[in-house]
Length: 254
Image (cartoon, rainbow, N blue to C red):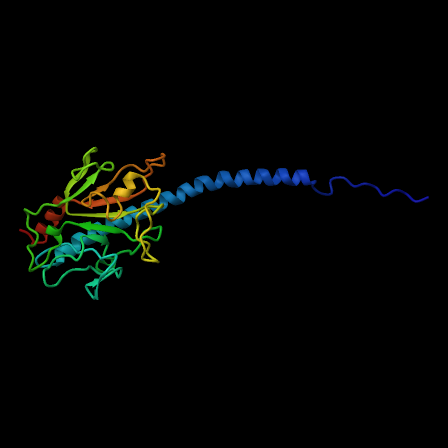
């Protein structure tokens, strides 16, 4: 008489046990990835802020080496004659040699001219706005201690050209540098040299895109994920007092 095979126990996992184990593992990984993603984004924001503050220093340093002193012009994002000082998206400031005026006062940071980073942590160009009174070169009227900036930094999307409906974060600003953040609404992509659509963007971020309703105003506010109030742009600006003091110290003004 043949003996029946002995049934072994504990030799493996059942399908139910495997499914439960995978479910628990998924929960653990999700719990780890959430904080990790937040940490990565925070690191990217800090990196962008550090880079942009270095750009402010580069702007002042550039002005201090020019006679008469002036800030660099933006690098245009489209158009241009294709010449060395009037070619889009090449990182070189674009200006008119005949008039001494910038080709545009709103464009890319001229990264090649300043020797700074071309793109932010998300692969998009840094936007740069400058007041003509501070960027004009000869034969145009150039910067003096009486020069006033025309740029305004608003605490929310304005309803008029004077930060209406909100408050000023800064006024009479010579220059502003802006990163459009992780979502990139309105940014010039560094690889394709095309502008990212603002479709779906909040009014605050739409105001920070090129061609906005109030061209001399930008918004700087606390980051938010609230519906209709989304905002992850990073904005820094050059104080006229800082610029004037540095140029006086360098014997470039008055």
